[in-house]
Image (cartoon, rainbow over all chains, first blue to last red; front, side, top):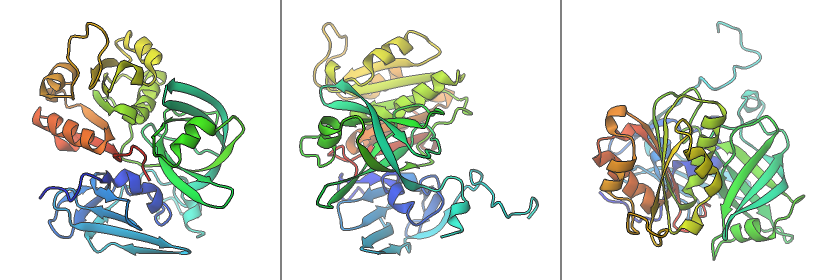
Length: 102
Length: 254
């Protein structure tokens, strides 16, 4: 299936908005599309930012992966289009309270 | 949230103060900013810029960081002015040294190049898509990194080239970066290739062959990125080795 329009950006463009919600960078995370099963980096998702919110679609089948809508002091996050997200934690600093082997 | 504050790379809004301005082309300007408590960045990352008008109206746009990481808390952004832009005319024409605006970043952990990487690197830029790739080139040079870098840079015309003198100087040293220009509208005099978009022949003649398994970074307008990525894939490059960053058709990412 071809793209809905050529007026999309990619997951990188949504990363600033997503940083309001997630402590970790999502662009490098691998996500699985709940519709076609494709596993791709979130950076590769097609992102539409012209709408009132942000819509990310699977680059393979165009299924909606994620929606974010911000209204005043609330953010609505819809993640049903992704089966999972797989994140690399090596860049995170451990909590100062963490024990070395915990 | 208390828990989130424990992470070292938490993205947050900071204040950037303009300390220098430099024109790159008739429509693009590099802004040097001093950022309070800047945590450092990785080449390829971007920041969101928020400018707020006196009446309270504010607009956020994303701009790539052009400078290599350094220890002086300064970053450079190169901004292309768009005719109907809301933020870029302000950033390229009205901003003066001492002005302050809000920055959120550094953002992005995938479209990045790290000095630990040693494989060949192929950079492909369309127009202002050169900006994050320039941060990678500058970082590669200053780190004396051993990777072999090549840049294929597509521009409308010679006058539209960003960082022309710097790229010219770097390309004289084969350990820095090999540069190929592709002109889409007007070429320099006696240029061997007629104006046109990047095609399979140009990819075959000026980019690393797939047997070297280069990591490729493609940045530019969406249509440019789609076509460059297809050409790279067709030339045998594994899709997993191609990292992309798309600008909107307006060039101004919201």
